[in-house]
Length: 375
Image 1 (cartoon, rainbow, N blue to C red):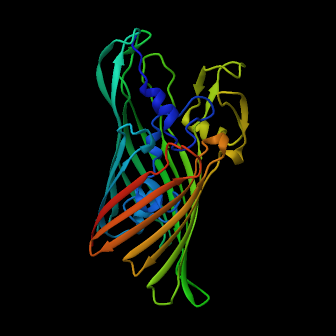
Image 2: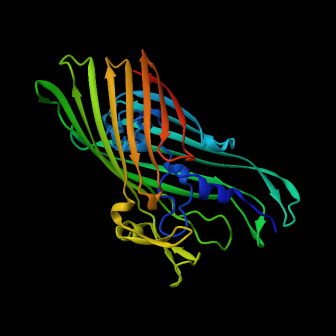
């Protein structure tokens, strides 16, 4: 029997959100990693902003309001506290076509490092690499001058391990997923003799069939996420040089697994269909946290992000934010800091995560994004 430990690593140490969805975990949680340093510096808020290429992740409807082409690359050493040679890369680009609109594409890659394969005695049988990757296209369409809808389609490939366990072959898993989104952007209005704008957005991402890694295993659901939020931008000096944006995102995992049988400590479960879960994941659920079975209410399943961004003359930005998950539903709580620079067609964004919990795996995570804006 070959022992494969990478699945345990992914399940235990990648807290991208409420990955313990009801019972068990959702598959491919790397799809929830916030890809751009700008939004990451604002407490993971972006569904109502979505004004750059990373709208593909936050809200593809935002592409409808963009009339430029852009390329952006984000890199982060992931879970730096473990020094485990994990890293995350996100390449995204948009292309504006006159009369058609803006089309976007992305490639997301998570390297999970090199693993050792052993037998039941601990004898090394070789090594293998683990990684996950997705690629897709997105498009936004304007319904009116103020309201747009968007969608995206991505292919997902997850190679966590190879070999066999208990006579079952371990294979890479794959799936496809769809996003559905909408974005409202107000006309400029005046508050205290200063120009202001208000946006509101919603995005239901990663809608698709689950992923299966062994022949007879139950499929694990994709991390379907419902995200809604607002953003308010105001001119501070009346001439547009100094601008401040407040943003708030609220999100929830929409996948749900149902435990088989009445034993609260049972590890056997079955996955709801994706559409069934959209309607049946609004109530509370029971979850075994390793010590006892706890009930997680709907309010406790919500994840909150709050962000603040200051721009000077569209050249220099400072950002900060706060993110919170309930302790029974992921237990992420951190403060974010960030900055950005723009010069001509080039830009750089930086973000830093300060975890409020001691020894948190995400502590001191740094993201760096570079972008080229083709006018």
